Image 1 (cartoon, rainbow over the protein chains, first blue to last red):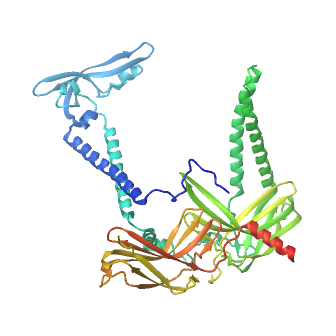
Image 2 (cartoon, rainbow over the protein chains, first blue to last red):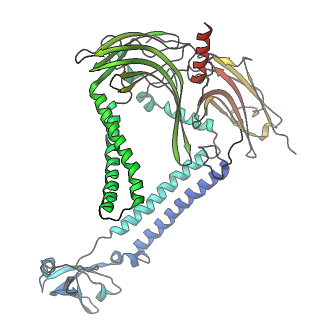
Image 3 (tube, helix red, strand yellow):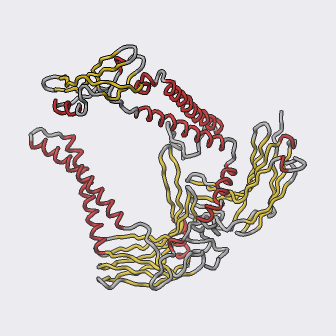
Length: 437
Length: 146
């Protein structure tokens, strides 16, 4: 069958047509540019700050100010702005007495302060008494124009330093990483990673595994069962699904409500907006379906109680037989309760910038099925079944982007229409070598 | 015109099937190049995934050989190495996840060129995965026949 020609298609993950050499050179160039930009501009900023030259002197003139003593001669509040928008600026007339000449200047700080009331402006001048001597700062090149009684902190200068240093750090780390990986084979990188895992500190934290790439089952065997050895944990709590249904139905209903009110308002006003009405109808339909689904979920969860699954051994081995014990609480008439043994392949991949995942079921075996019984409050359904892992099946597996999951799934089909599926992860080991645990 | 070097890898079992914890003995030889042209050789026993997901790779055994490591500085001569294979992951031919084991030898030349040769082998003897629909239909026909 001929394939459709696609004009534009996202490349999948590492399956790209670009050259690795060009990519490495590009990365090196990019990180070098960031690193050298950071180094050059940090050096320039430091030099400019220390030597008190352009551009720091232009951007932050107070960096170059020297401290002196000034006599406050007078204080005042200047009215600015308009009648509708009055502004009041507090000022002090200072006398700077230098050996070469005296300077008089109305000042307080370099960036003028404005207040909306006269009272607030006068309050700002509290503490400045005419005739008293206060410390002041000024630019030695133009003391008369620059003298201030209060020096503002140069926070902006520190922000500039922080940004420039972050350029050095990001560029430097990126450059070292790129150079380390350049010309290194994937096997060598993998060997580096493996060697890092065997470092003493890490080895103490993570004991060596006898079965590499098989997920640890510690979390599955830490809860003893009542009848059998282990009580299996449930994969996803049904409460989360219920919460997700609630949030979706609330959000969608809110949106549908807004559409509905707007459309109805137009109709009542005699100016019907038919486009809005047409859009509102399916939106309201989805909202009603979401609410109905939420109510069904609530009904199902209140009638169907917790499901418990215990197993005689763990981990499991292909070809071996085990016992499973299921308990189901609640208040309902059950059409069918089924326990399935499932093995799924899972793969994650990048499609363009999106991370996608795909699963494929490769084993689906019915472990047990019970039909036509009633569960009463305080009297849960309990049953013991035999489970056999099929011979020749793949063991559990987990790597960065690929996995093979095994699980036991309890499916309940109740008479009032509630259908629930509860999943219990398990770990299957390779059959060839069974170790005593 | 220069002749490309050839990497020859040999496994001790012609069937190339091993069981977990088995000893694997492999040897490799570089042909068609002068020893002085070889900068380094990397020999790895590794597994990698294939299929829908991104490729994952892990080395079980990795050796990097440099001319300075050997007295005669000749890396092109046949070299033998052995390793005890791990218990997992087993070779697997799944529907969207496949796990392949291989011996890979990578040759780095002085001029910066790189050559790679890989010989696959099986760890374990798992059957390939069959789609559930196919499994069900074959089970149904077996039941009908019975």
